[in-house]
Length: 102
Image (cartoon, rainbow, N blue to C red; front, side, top):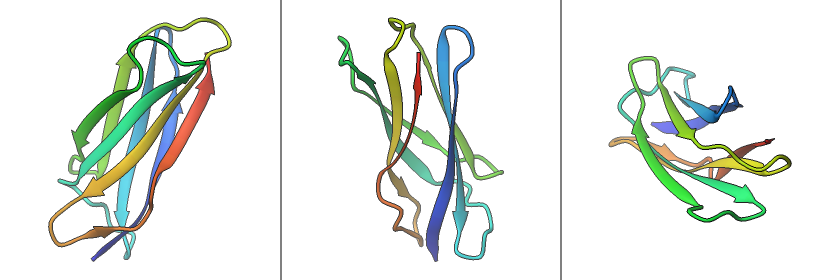
């Protein structure tokens, strides 16, 4: 089966940012148990960035990446999905990113 896409969103409540990834197959069914790799970065670059993370999708096909870190006003925070892996599936979505200004 092919993982045809994902829904990637970014939420920035006070003092943290959360990227949510929902993985779906070619038939639009959710893909649970997939390993999702991603990376947080900032512009301008800050010490300690980029930060790589990995999560596994749950029963609903979703994974959340939370990074608790404050930034200077005007900093652009970006989360990019760099890969999705699950046995029996191929991921053809490439790198997908979301960003927000702090």
